[in-house]
Length: 377
Image 1 (cartoon, helix red, strand yellow):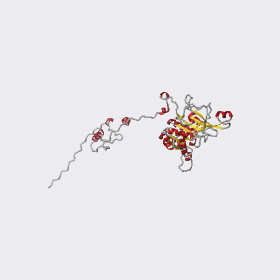
Image 2 (cartoon, helix red, strand yellow):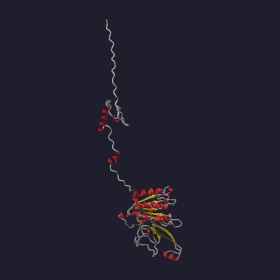
Image 3 (cartoon, rainbow, N blue to C red):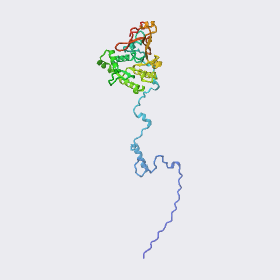
């Protein structure tokens, strides 16, 4: 007969005395994670995932940071100026740019030079001692040359242009009143043709020699208002030509037509003069006159220009005056006056003028009074 299994005896639970919980102090409280730092047990970017010990993971991360396992160390921005190349020196002088100390200049005293044009214009300015003619127009100056139409201003200027160009200097002829060259055979004796004929007569060269010795140095700039050219267009082209070709002598025919309103002639001349001074350009500006006999631009123009040469008609109103000037009573003669020159003395009296045969260039008249002599250079 099978024996019955004895039921398991349940042991009575043993009572474990409660352990008192230690009181937490601030130093024993777990550190709170800082913003951006993962908590213990969370994976860190770029850190090997071993899964186990957080302390080991932290040590691995530190090794990677110190050994270059992560991205290269970033340079402190404050040290950047010292890590690059040397800074470029600032060339801007600021407010000192337009200040000049005359005591620091070495070439303070200069003597005015002249540019010979081969006309009466060479005789109007004098040397500093006033005993001789300068022998040319003042070099580096902007000159207003005005007078009635048909008196020989353009011919005189073109002959002078040809003589300067024959000396080897590049020159410019600014055309504002008419076209320079007619491509079509219109039968017109255009300005180009007149320049060549006047220049050949003034220099004594034939056409072949004139082309090589003179025209090779001549540049023509057309700036005509009827073609839509403005003063600003002229300034742009003028600066380009002068600086590209190293121009040092310019004839403008005429200054007034560069601004057809004729309301800003003096202001335009002022701007032109300032630029010419900077570049060392001698500029002969042919101008027109009003019915009053004053140049277009008036006293403002005469005040602005470095030199002013003015052609006038003089009436011989008495027999004594007629005898003095070698004319006939009640006739009119042409005279030229040097109104001013800022760099030289000028003749204090007018010079009677006539036009040379062949060239039409203005020259002192044979009947110039002895009391008003034209001085030799």
